[in-house]
Image 1 (tube, rainbow, N blue to C red):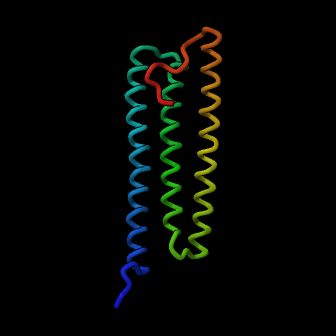
Image 2 (tube, helix red, strand yellow):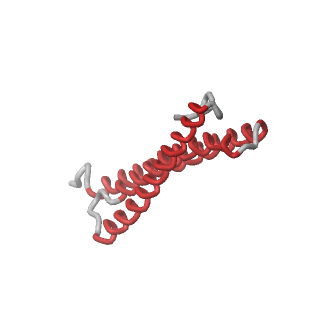
Image 3 (tube, rainbow, N blue to C red):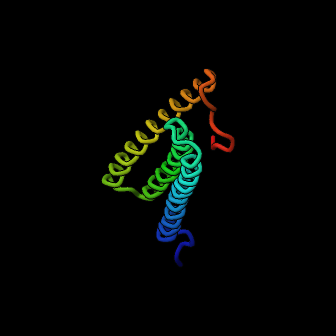
Length: 134
């Protein structure tokens, strides 16, 4: 009699989860790109000063950071069942790259937010516009 939850079944279940998490990450990035594009068009029609595009970039950056987290989660899931040394090394490399991307993206978002807050405090412009994603 075969096991109900054998290694074959577990492998297929994890493969399905990996695909779902990868798809979620891709959808988040796509949705962020679409939201940013619409916001960009709206802002471009009203005002072409470079600082008016910063909130659009911040919103897109947040979506990218979240999407990258989902992609990293799928990479971790992929190596959940009996990983080889090569798979562990690949995961480490991908995780390092994605973590670095996320770190620098997060740092840029923080710096841009501080600059927006400073401009707002100085009365030189609005903080993030109404409806901006946080």
